[in-house]
Length: 247
Image 1 (cartoon, rainbow, N blue to C red):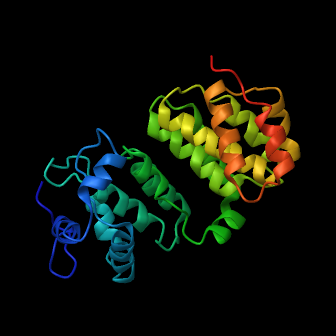
Image 2: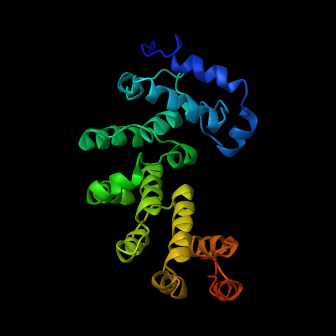
Image 3: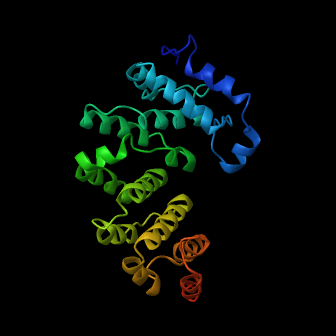
């Protein structure tokens, strides 16, 4: 596929290859075993490029190209997918349904934990205030998807934006109902459960006390909670007594 989108007279591939000169490919590859197309570009450099694309006013043209599915192996870098997510996290949202469609297309190309976790909503407080119900309805179905990174996306997005008093009692059962056993889903569930406990311990404690989650998720969540400075020593001591035996 030949690139038609250019910014500063260079294609996205040319930008990424240049930025890779200041990156750390071996280190990044170790963090992403088995993921193809890793360049090792530093995240601050990717964010700066995304900001430049958005501020230039060329984001619609960029997205048209980024959303093509017939990418050649030579241009299908992991960092191109991360850049795509960063752009969506900075894009002004004038047409919310159209934005969700852009987001849906990006979720389909997530193929690593870092691509997944790179996303954040633009002007999140405003979007949640105006479209919170629609965002909830968009994220929740991913929890029951068959593909590992789409499930992780749902877990992480809900953790980012819906661990609150209004949703905590709905969110915990939804997390418990996740059936995907992929490592990156299980890790995300542990992370999310730890966050739920940190901010809503009263609502979350019964899930740990009764050991409702799978043993690995349960124990990893307790580990993460105990690593938090927000949790007092007595609570940490109690939680350590609740560790589950490996199944």
